[in-house]
Image 1 (spheres, one colour):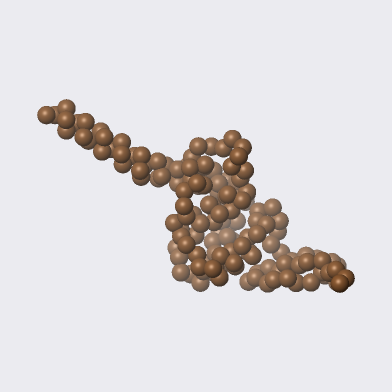
Image 2 (cartoon, helix red, strand yellow):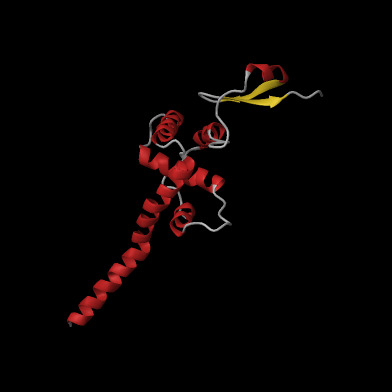
Length: 150
């Protein structure tokens, strides 16, 4: 009788760990690895990104959900999944986001963070502006495109 109860408890724990425990461990270890890659300046970069995301979403979501969304979307773009990758990071990146942004929020997200972290989100120097024109405008940055003759 006690062996049966013990077996049921062990199987129950194993099932819980397979469904929920691995996800929680992947969130913890995978997000730490991605934060080290995506936020090279540490807390300063993270605070800037969180502020920008709160502006884009008009403070509808908390920082945990926004950080999860940012890490998964930008992590898939920055990290090459085909190369050898930490198990926890791969598991974290392959899990769905906890947050679903609407179309307009997604467009603003991609406009604001298209080249992050490789390129700066600041406007180009004034010397180049004569040959370029603004293609889109976001809350704190402009994107320029070279002028071409028709």
